[in-house]
Length: 433
Ligand SMILES: *Cc1c(COP(=O)(O)O)cnc(C)c1O
Image 1 (spheres, rainbow, N blue to C red):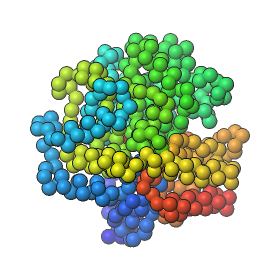
Image 2 (image 1 turned 135 degrees about the vertical axis):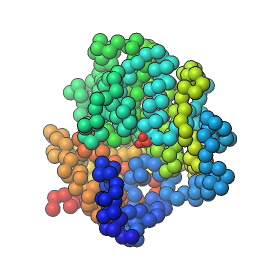
Image 3 (image 1 turned 90 degrees about the vertical axis):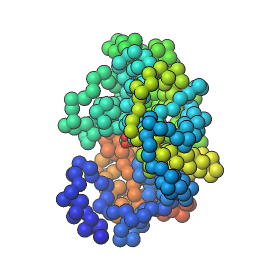
């Protein structure tokens, strides 16, 4: 069927709320390129929302899935377990920056991992309050939607929300919530937790602070080096668990570290992992200190599909690919190239107010003018639309819908990257016309 025929059918059967960025239907995808049903090729700077770090149709991952599919596709780990889930747990314990000894719980989606982080944190601390950051995104289930900051489209009309979720400012230095300037501010946003926030929500009622080290949907907000060490210290002093939501920022998305929080030298109590872990197969994990994870009684956490054998086969293969193909070095190198290109774009186009991020998890924040920093969501949408029409998949984000972000597969070739960046440059040039 053609794109148009499928789209017509879609409109009669699929829920409108389950919307797509582009009405082109995928036939196949390889590496960093997606081909639609009409043979049009797209260079992908989105990676299916940071899922495809090892590239589409990675041969090693495909082979592992095929092999597993012929053996068994499900038994339920809680009924009768299998080795691949344990192997994956062992690998995750090796790479996730939680102090040892540690334990792993396998789930299906990012939101499910975050939900379970909260369940376990509440169970262990016997406290109920959960603290999240401004501009956070943690998912779309009732609890994780509550933890998410942006109202439209994520929360609008879906209340009432879950209780005992509180919000503090993030270190969004380009738009400081406290109106201060880094580094003169002395990281006042972290001190605010102690000086102000604890007066409203008493620390001995707080189970955990949950934070994305580099915020994804919120606009790739990247706090300065002092921020997370200070937040983690305040947590420690008050018996509050520090949870890093690495669902988007993990898996070498931020360059030379496997997980973004490692750039700050902080070891969280709990970490959530998903997206690029399964190369498209739905799998996520909660990894935490053994003392915390094992406080929960047998059967207290679980799920029918958590650690599904096909997903474990994929994730095990993904982690092997990371090692064999040195994805950390690749990511760092890619990050340097994108950063250089983005800095050049900023010099060229006034509409770009800020370049930020870590490694190839980079973003451009668009503003009406650089003095007032008034967000430019229309220009952002125009750049994205232009790119799509020229064969570049580009994703925006940000609380003000004015940020363009890159999450391309780490295996993107130099020529694909160059072509994609050229389209992006043209898209900015088209704004003035
Ligand atoms: C995508 C995302 C989630 C939610 O993951 P789903 O698999 O869509 O439920 C949670 N946290 C962060 C930081 C994310 O980027």
